[in-house]
Image (tube, rainbow, N blue to C red; front, side):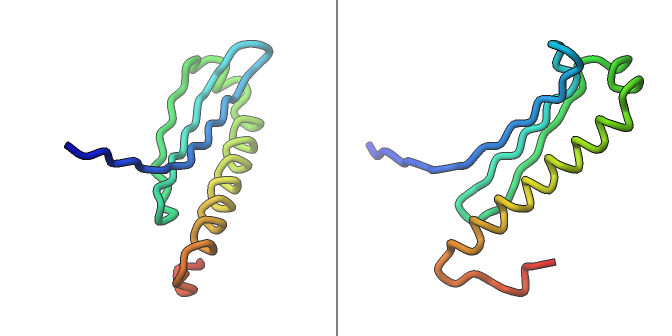
Length: 85
């Protein structure tokens, strides 16, 4: 029997209108800095009614995902500079 321990980093974004969570965005990063993303909308009506602000916040979340990817890649022993786009 063996124990395999895998370290990951997880980022969650909850877009809310008042106290209601309208959309959830999740990015989980593996040890190589790759982000695996998932998202879902809990309330289509509130999302559509507030889509301009929702999209602004989605971009902010995506920028944070890029930031964390870059941090992980920079911490790797032989970070591949060609991966920067």
